[in-house]
Image 1 (cartoon, rainbow, N blue to C red):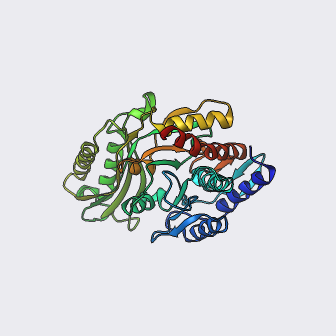
Image 2 (image 1 turned 30 degrees about the vertical axis):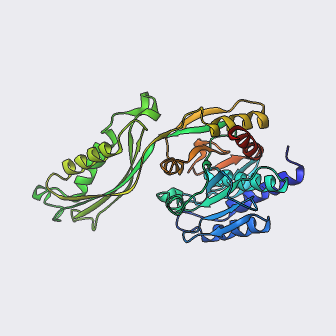
Amino acid sequence: MLTEAERSESIKLLMDLVSIPSKSGSEQRISEFIFNWMKSKGFHHLKKDSVGNIYGDTSRSSAPQLLYCGHMDTVPGEVRVRLENDRLYGRGSSDAKGSLAAMLFSAYLTMLKRGDDVAVLAVTGEESGSSGIKHALKNGVLQKYAVFGEPSGSNKIVIGYRGRLEAKVEFRSPSFHASKPWVGRSALQCAVDFAKRVETLWGNPIDKEKFNVVSATVTEFRSGVAPNVSPPRAKVTVDVRIPPDRRLDKIISELESIVMQSAAGAQSKMKLVEASDGVLIDASTPIVKAMRRAIYQATGSPGVCVRKTGSGDMNHAVMHNIQCITYGPGSTSDEHSESESIEVNDYLRSIEVLKILPAELYRMIA
């Protein structure tokens, strides 16, 4: 169990991280804080790469086989940082600075108590196309096993994610005076048609097993030049989530077809910003079994494997033959919300779990 001093220090680390604004693209300040914190705690092989990722490990020699990877960026928006009734409020508290803080602090305790070694990678850009993990993977992640930090709850293990497409669609058509709608079809009308079509293209997932269906949500819509002019341009961003058993190229092709149908003679183009396959991890793999044992030892309850309808950095790591799971304190219901928060006790339990995991994994694969 954590001592009172360790509890206090770990909560301070979490509050410090949450108190530093770090929306995607603006992670420099928090990146520097994490680097300096890890340096002060004696992490080895400490480095910062060209995109702001921070790496350090607890080994004096070779790189450990186990990696803890958490993202330091958040979605935009402010949530006043405060501790109320054993909950810490603030943007990023749940998604996913709680996970990152738990990884950092558990690794520090492991090193302090001369336990089995673990590496920690704090990445940028997870909320904007996973640019940080893509850069890290391209430049060589040496670990065979990895835990990615996202809110799951301290007794749950995420073994499944849907894939993700982020597409930016633009329509163009000649403008005309708003008093003459019979002249033609505006770019805005094309965009509205596209938004209606794409959100119902793959059916209604409300009454179905949501992990196993394709769903689409329009997230950005921009158009208009003046109140009395038909818009000559319209831009739409759509977020599509895809289960592991569906082919990415087929979904892209269906999306392109909807763009062409909605344009109906107007000019159109589609740009893919993000494209990742869905993943489903075998629950019998060593990393899953070791995490279930760690959860049981730390909490007295068996670890539960779950699947999430979102996507994460784990999607990309699996493509590099890294055996992965996702784990972290917090609830998915708090992600990106106006009252984002994390239960302090859930955070502390996750530190205990992550402190135990390296020994369990290495014992299993020895």
